Length: 412
Image 1 (tube, rainbow, N blue to C red):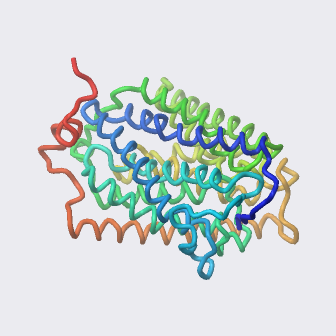
Image 2: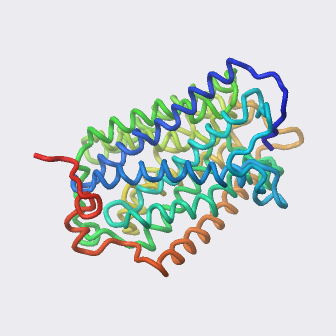
Image 3: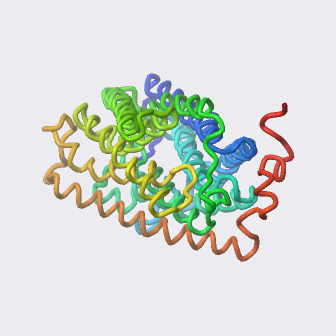
């Protein structure tokens, strides 16, 4: 469990690094992920995607301050969820987490709680009501994200079992990916998807710019999760960059062999797949592990995109489950093997071997899968009792920019 204590010695170097990391992770959402997704939709929906990211960032901040941090990082109930002792970010005077001030730790974790529901945006673009986005994200943060964060990082039952999730393979990518799959199935396909005439990304340039911001920001995402400016953070950044590069290059090779033309969007997507896959293992594996996870993320996530979008015809619009969900789960499970010292990792826990670690990792993924899928479905059904989830057909055809926000991304 993340332990807090008062009157300890703050390390100025660690504090400076987490201050920078917090900024980098927020930068991943605003503007990184927002631009990445905005470039992938039709031009008539670009403003709506940006509004969804901005709205989520603001609302998740408010909920985290009032309730979320306490649910995720206070003393808990039976290892399931934190109590309410830290509502409104009520810190003990001089409290610290590791060697940084607790307010900074709360801020760093807040950036994670912002980007996780923002990732889910990719599953419902171009057809969902803005009010539903906010209501769903708020309920989902409280019911899904905060408990899972407590299980893994806050001293819950998965932490007690020895689960390894350095920076969010379970807490961020698995939960977001699974939620995306559920909401895509419940919400239904876009009209263009149903007619097999999905419009291609309107701006690969915006997508590449956003992806580049994600790549840089991920150094704070993974490196900052060490909570110190030390060797672990250094290795986490190194393996993060290696996996991202290999993930992107895997898609270059696959698309070149398959279509004869590697695409910019494909490179960017492969990069994100590599990053999602290395995330849970980034503080535990070495260079060899990073190479394996980069290849696994790039290749297997590509296969998952084909399976979900083409074969199963599920309109997870921007491939959130196939990239983040599949990548996060693969990285989580393989971490149990690749943390071996023989593969350049930190080594197994005392009294455990690869099989035992993999069993714990698999158990954590399965438990998170069951909870996320059931809770996400029930949240959507609850909301649908009071408000329809989708915009009407006329507004979908017109585009959400003008019909929902009264603005256009491009005024000629």
